[in-house]
Image 1 (cartoon, rainbow, N blue to C red):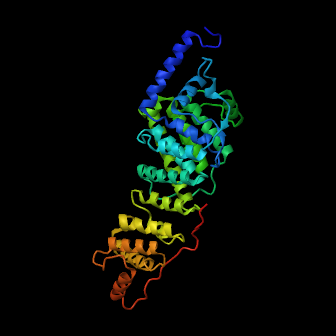
Image 2: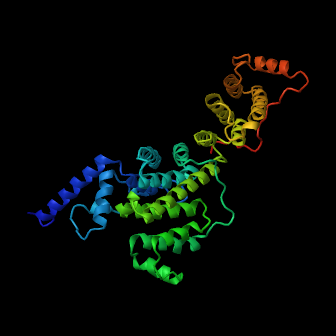
Image 3: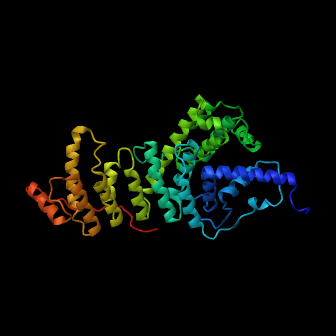
Length: 396
């Protein structure tokens, strides 16, 4: 036997690890591996990275298992090799986002990993197709979570310095112990005494968090779910409280991310954002849908109008006694938009009118709809088409 080959008993260990890894890989698509790869091909601000360590599911599982093991087996050192050149980070980006979207969102850990990825890369991914895919998945997450509307970043969010000891305290409460460096950080912040998990959860809830802060807090929750089957199952009172916190953080991240992408410079991303909002349980808020339909980019404006054509008017949020007036205002608005010179917008507006006016002239000709409107409103001026000058039509 060569001195460089692993002893026979270690070969058995490696075989056991491989067998376990194959079993895990066949049962799920290892969302942690997908998120890890996304981090390898991006810098923290979402810019693409061209050096890193991208791993397939088996490599990720093995390297994770061996990283926490006292066993060292020659021949497997390459699994934790130094960074190498990444030839196609954009392709890897999109592939791992697609794979991550297939994870079982009914599992609190998997759904958390999804929101970590999509809530980060929806607004921040440099690669436009990756950004679009993440925004589409934000829409599915918003529907799952029952989000009512996009959120606005709080003006006075907790700083990283304020958040760090609180999250370290949550980690310690869930894990029992922390690495000495983190224990020292807690002591320096005056947090040397351990809290129970419920108190640590309430300390997180007491902070006002922006998207970055909420992403950091969710990442700690996901680590706790990954490390503890008891917490992941939600069987105990403490575990249920941690589930509640994780879902609150998921909703906050999704809401903040959707709020940001509504102002994305790329029309395709704004269009995807409005489509995502249409998946909310109450539909897209009426004002935001009209904002979409008046976007200066015809692709976005037509997409907003087609949401009305496919789903009907967004009147569910209005009180019953205000819906008839709301319907009349929307019809006026759509008649105005059917006169937009761009054929895509005019077509979409006429299609929306066909959906909401059952006794109208029908068809997709703006002239027919304006004549119909004049016949019903002889003493009023014809509504004018609207274009939002604040919309951005660049393709960055």
